[in-house]
Amino acid sequence: MPVLTRLIPSPVVVDIRAGALDDLAAVLADQRISSSGRLAVAVSGGSGQVLRERLAPALPAADWFEVAGGTIDGAVRLADAMRGKRYDAVVALGGGKIIDAAKYAAARVGLPVVAVATNLAHDGLCSPVSTLDNDNGRGSYGVPSPIAMVIDLDVIREAPVRFVRSGIGDAISNISCIADWELSHRETGEPIDGLAAAMARTAGESVLRHPSGIGDDEFLTVLAEALVLTGIAMSISGDSRPASGACHEISHALDLLHPRRAAAHGEQVGIGAAFAMFLRGAEEQAGLFAQTLRNHGLPVTPGEIGFTEDEFVKAVAYAPQTRPGRYTILEHLELSTDEIRDAYADYAKTIGS
Image (cartoon, rainbow, N blue to C red; front, side, top):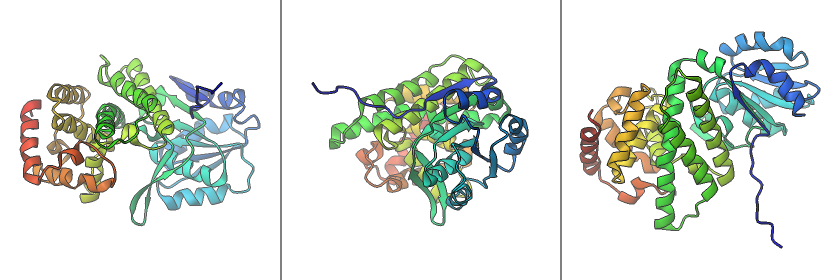
């Protein structure tokens, strides 16, 4: 009889609540991730030092490593510093840059990662990908996803509110990404993983339609869960397809064409998702996206993040080049620059900018 199930790569612990950080040592011991307490803790040089002072007494056997941003060089230096020390796990304590560097370093030395997120800026917290700066710009590297996720809502509230807003934009963009994946399935025959798509779409919808806002713990919990579920969806599919479509191509294009002026990732993909929904003829849903972004204080037009209409139009035209081989509404329509400009003008009227 065939086995009609599959194993899903996911964390053994997902602890999202106020005060979760205070129980970190107990969680690691209880789940047998580190009963000895021999941990390598990666932190930033800024806010990470404050958290180090708070946590160090509870982790007396841990070694602490300061990581300078999300670069490939920094991740390699971290791996070299940990090599041969017989740690049970790597604890990544910080935002996306620290977590990505720690995931990459841990993969090089064969250790599991515990991600302790201090902000909710994007969906890479629990993903099997590390996005790191290198000599040629920025690259994405496949890595094991974290073995545990700890998100303390008290810590999240202390981070700049812009980080939470960015996470909202990234989460709701899932809906546009899944529409692109389904379009590719119909037009090119690209396989679609139904479970990964369902998880990513549900995560996006939970944030899009939640009635409360950033100041509410219930909303922050839903957002954190959505970002974790999106990371698991990417692990299931084996790539970023459940959470990367036309909206992310547009964001990547803005990053490449204007590297010194790029806005937060979630701000860019939020605008990209609303515009992509408009391009595929879903005007009502594009309006809902725009209204949700506005409700949470996010931008809905490129002008609100410092780009002119012409710069945005050129970025949309360039966007397909950022992910060769990926099929989205942009590749499907193959719009000229003039057609994109006309479409954007119609989009701006529709969302009432």
